[in-house]
Length: 120
Image (tube, rainbow, N blue to C red; front, side):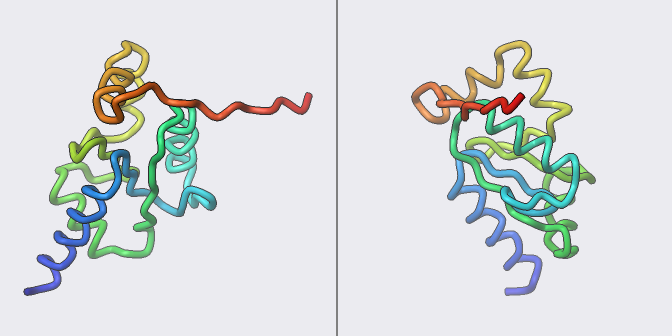
């Protein structure tokens, strides 16, 4: 098995293990790019569990993901095993209510959005 096959298997396992998976720059607790942070905040607003995989310094994996999705940039969002692009795609889907329906079908229940404490 070559490196490409190993990377593909690793990616397939990660996608299968997480109903919402974001490949980005940095982690959920330490995003290293504004777009990854925006995506984390976006999904926190829906209240479903999701995971972020840091591929910032893993060029082979980033290239494999780009080839697999035909999407050159990060972050890359997968929901229930299906690739959805980034927040430029799922943002408008959420505005139309389409994303909420996908999440409801994926999880079988409504999400529990995190409450934000306003300190002002």
